[in-house]
Image (cartoon, rainbow, N blue to C red; front, side, top):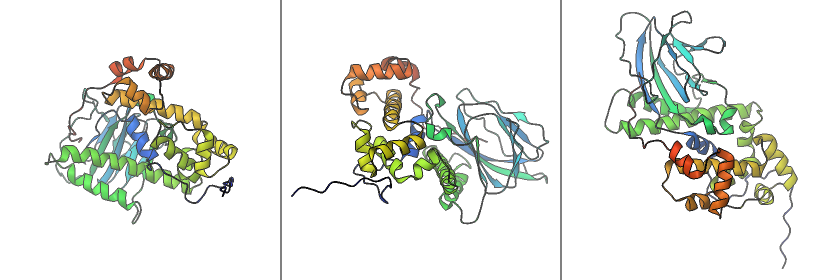
Length: 339
């Protein structure tokens, strides 16, 4: 008996079909940009104090564990007061200051040669108001920034509220405990917790933006049809996806799916597929010893020649040249304290 034809509509199903692994687009975006292990530590500072962080390719995160302080942006934005439990993400890596008061002079922080922050010993209690801070930093490759992160503002401030983001608070507590000193296992635990903290901060921001009726990537991650297609693309970039197949899996007509995807993601489905394939190829070339034919196959190219041509068109370098020039030295498990 012939099977009935599927009825397509402009409304996504409540649960989009998915036979591939449920890949996390947000996690993939961070993984694709990461160039080294994150590092963190905590310190106590007594008033008056003020520090200025330089421009960098990294992303900073700060949590006020005790007392209060002020964020002093360098872009002319007004100072922002931070209280106990507040989480602050500096997403763009620009210069900024932290101080006990907006009028306190700032001392420049000089980064180590490897781009990490120097350690700073706890200042003794002397009767002056003090603040205890948890500070972390992530090294990201902004030359290949995922568009998902482009919509994140330079400053993400998540004020502490009872019952709000309990998972985030749990990770902050663990980091605060692990960052007190060099304890057994901390070299592996701290980077893992920092990765989790970054994802939880971004998740919280995207969820709040979605609740406010945001557009763009914040809306894309909350849209059943578009999110389904993104998971399919990320889950199997080597698959020969077509707009028709992605639309069917998302439960939309081809035209409706293409319009919705393009409006929220900022480029057509196959354009994003190509971009993600090339981004995945760049990450594999930096971190994997696999032959080019294997990288080609894992990113959807049956011909090594076709892959090399597409890669050079995207990066301006051959895959071999990119691997030689861009691949960093293999890092050790050195996540030292940032004070």
